[in-house]
Image (cartoon, rainbow, N blue to C red):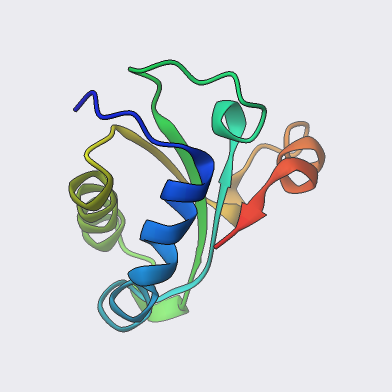
Amino acid sequence: MARKFSLKDILNILKDSKKTLSEKYGVTDIAVFGSYIRNEHKGKSDIDIFVELKREFKTFDNFMDLKFYLQKITSKKIDLVIKESIRKELKPSILKEAIHA
């Protein structure tokens, strides 16, 4: 999983997958944050993504399936978090830098 992507590449992959993300995984919002936003990523950097999910999709199995799906379509390790579970002290800076797909 060492393919090199730009932020634009990642956002395009996520946008192209929006229908599947919504219908199969219940994603209502998805955004990239972290090293890719700050252009500090290296070849082996993971992609930091947060999502908002429809209530009925907020299960551990769905979360893991979504993470594996994102890893498959990007060929990168994904650090996935649900937006509402971002730690309070980190949330303002993450939300400020995030770019939504």
